[in-house]
Length: 356
Length: 79
Image 1 (spheres, rainbow over the protein chains, first blue to last red):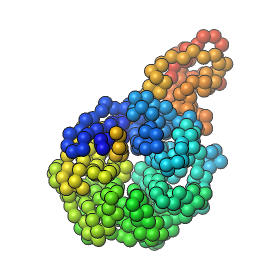
Image 2: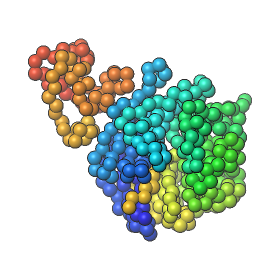
Image 3: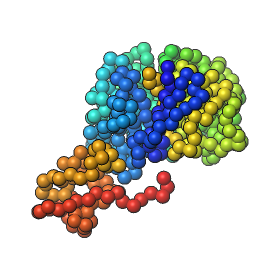
């Protein structure tokens, strides 16, 4: 395996490549210059790469490359129907469909919208069942806009998937996107003091489904870290047992161990920076019962922020990128870290790719 | 950025009756116009050096061999 990282930044996409040791990294020149790359992801079905791209001049779109970033094409049709009363603000997250679903992709964006493509990203159709969800009037934008930032496919059940929107919460479909059910039971919305456990309105920051145990979901939220063991029907809050703060954005998993997860806490909603100048990755190996600080090789003091899409993991590694333009990589489950890149533009996303 | 979207090409020759129809015939039309077909706020359009806002906007008639320029507005400061 030749680990590759797709690093989306405020000013273009960078490709980091290394060898099995993940010690020395080569950093490409910027691709998609001028575009804010909110997320870039490889499509294992055909080797192409998709990027959710935004420009303050030219709007929100999706780019696709079939030659590892040498050349790019752009979505031809992407927008919201006029009768929704909504217009597309940003694209946030691209999720390739399953094996056998040739050409299918999912795209999350703002304001709280999900799209589907069946032609490899040329044209996109809004998923009306979620865009026009009956609870939409109870959704509110977070600081980054009302973004649909997490799209997770159940690896076993082809009609089950999840979408997470800040601040609307998590939604699950069991029928391939025809209908969506809120999946927020047990997830706090402490910013609603009169009703801290509403049906919707939770500020989920990042949602992941474990590939080897798909009933297990992990969630980093504005109000805590959570785990579900029943497809998101019920959630258990997990901090207060080693974490300095329940607030943070990214969450990572070990694809081979459903009990292991990693978070990077921040001081809190009003000061979004690593607590006590300690850039640390906190790991649980017991399903969130306890957390331990991993700091080997990470700088201190460091007042750092890591955005929701700026972390990733694969079978051998854990990775994250900072708003201050550094990428850190670990090849041993977070025990020690190497600074794989520095002085990049502010990092918006990190995605591990297995490019052979 | 616009040129990069079309393989580096910076100039197109098109036949059209209005500025809007000329721009909509370009392969970068969906960057210049939003999903409602409106010219994006930070894209400036000049016809022979005159801002189309001082003319008839996208309805400005083309009668000869005018040169249309697309220029991103001066903006930013927070990025």
